[in-house]
Length: 99
Image 1 (cartoon, rainbow, N blue to C red):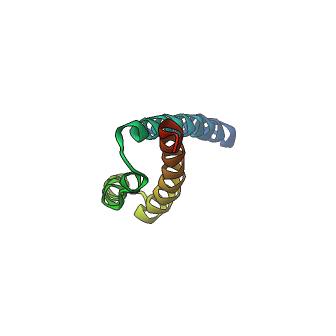
Image 2 (spheres, rainbow, N blue to C red):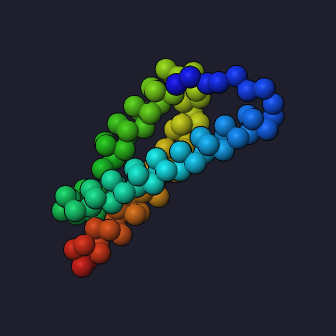
Image 3 (tube, helix red, strand yellow):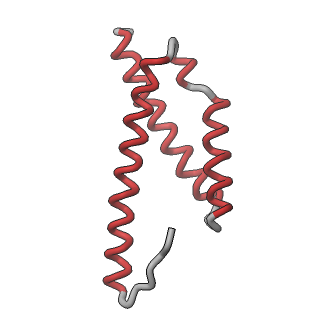
């Protein structure tokens, strides 16, 4: 990803605002896929797959290191995001299965 050289505070803020919009869109898309997962699983325990969560976080941390970004920041963000999305997936599972 190429980062442009901004010429003013306002320009830098506009670029950040554009990125924030894209980040939220990507998180929404991720959540939509997570909710689809509920239809392929057979139990709530299967949704809370600790091995899969650890794998996702480890890959995100590795990518953060590759991009010279704090892996601890990414770890914390992903833990929070995954926790909320697991709740979303459980709700979808229960709704789909009429739990």
